[in-house]
Length: 256
Image (tube, rainbow, N blue to C red; front, side, top):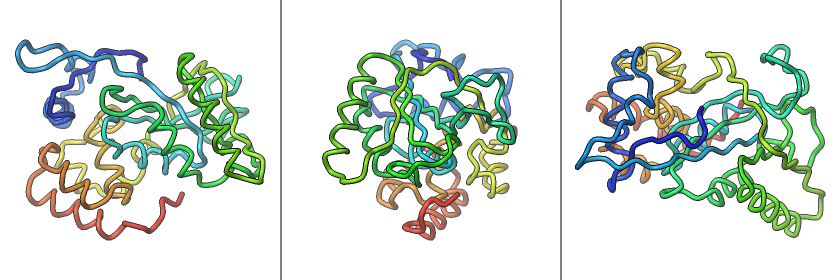
């Protein structure tokens, strides 16, 4: 995902952005997401998206948790933090599983992203584990560094065990294999088909896929889902299908 890339937004939040994403959903893979972000006078305003990168255990869970957060545009999972060239899931080297988050800073702050990070570790926050699943904040600018360090200090004051989270400068992100992208959503081929999320490229880059992946895993509340539903552009049948899983998966835990 490109850093500080112009994207579109409106006073109604993500609704117009998701509407533009219909082109990607319908298989127009020759049109990239950011090509759809061209300003439409009188309708849309350009903003500067920001980027955040976190390691908090298995990246499937983080993908879901950040995906449903209001203000998050899209997510991508991958490998970062190490020196090995071209890591893969089976040969990750010294890298860590991370979720890369593109977000609208006018709608969600980096401090709010940090709050999700600290509250949702699967493991590794105070227990030493292998680097693949370690607790890691990769900052993209000085503000993120300072906020990350301050939040770690606050977390340490709350705990008796040592907080093991590392905070380092972001260097390079390697996109994970396609089957890891929007992993929970991929268990629902009918929903993918009916919403036009019909290729790995679309699933990887689509803001809609990001939202659906989180909701279907139970990462968002039913109240949040019902509020955002009109902006998702789903058919009645797709809405009912998704709502069923939002309700069923609440409180089940985002296992990996």
